[in-house]
Image (cartoon, rainbow, N blue to C red; front, side, top):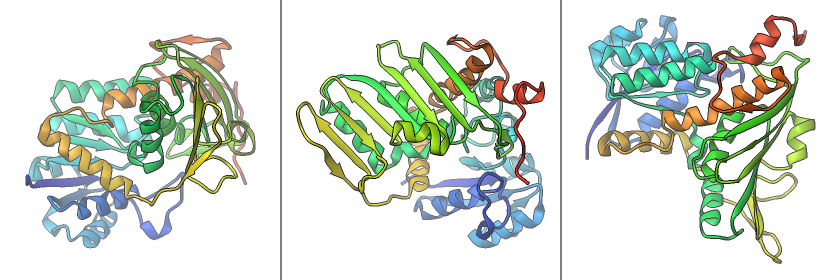
Length: 355
C-alpha cells in the first residue's frame, strides 16, 4: 500500500467555536479525514496566524518543525503528496496557483466554492494544468449514500429516461455549488448550454467572504435535452422545489432529502407508489480524500476534479449575470467577474446587514 504525506494550508481558529459562514474550521474536517486514512500521514500545516497553526499541530501530532506561517516555505520544505486549502473563498485561487507553482505537491485539494469570480476559477484550473498538479475541490456530496443511490436508480432505469433535474437549497453559490455539481452528474457530466436566472437580495448574506443571494430562480438546458430548475432561499424558492434534488424521468421520479418525509430518498416508477429509503451516515471528507489519493496513485481523473468544479461553478456566475442582463446567458460565460458582487458594488442591489 502506497504511503502518502499530507499538509493543510489555513488551519483556522478553534473548531469548538465554529461560526458557519465566517469560520467553519474546515481544516479540522480535513485533519480528521487524513488521520483516519491508514496510508496517509498528516505531516505539516500552515496558517498566517501562528497560534492557529500550533493548535492544529497539537491536535494532530504534527511535529513543531513542520508548523509554518508561510505556506510556500512549508510546501518546499515538506514536499507533501497532497495539500488541502481550507481558507476563505477569495484566497482560494491565489493559493492554488501559488501551491502549484512551487512544484512540491502532486495534488491540491481545495475547499469549495472554487473562487470569488469566474475568471479566478479558470486561472486556478489553468495553473494546475500547466504544472501537472491534480487539482480537486471538496464536492464531498458526490460520496453521500442518498445521492449515490439516486444515481444508481437513474442508471438502472428506475424512472426511465431523465428529462429534468431540480434542486432546492440555501443559495446558488456557497450551498449551490454542491447541487449544481450533482445536477451535472445526474445529467451525464454535461456543461449547460444556457441559463436564465433572477435573484432577490435585500438582507446581506456574506459567506466566507462572498455575497450570496437571498432568493433565486434559475432554469437551464443541457445538450442532451435534459433541463434544469433551481429555487433557493428557505421559506421561498427552496420550499417550492420541496427537496434537495428531484430527478424527473419519463417513467417516474426520484427525490433526495424530500421535505416532510422521514427518509433520505424516495422514488416511484411509472404507475407505482413511492418507495422510501434511509441510509447510515458516512464520513464524506474521508471518502473524498481517499478517492483523491487513489487517483494520485492510479492517475485517473477524480470525480471531484477541477474540470467538474468548473462545470458546476460556471452556471452559478452565469445565473447572476443573467439577472444583471435581464435575459438568458449562453455558455461559455463571457463575463470574468461576479455579477452579484458587482451589482452590490455599483448600487444596483442594496442589501442591508443585520444589526
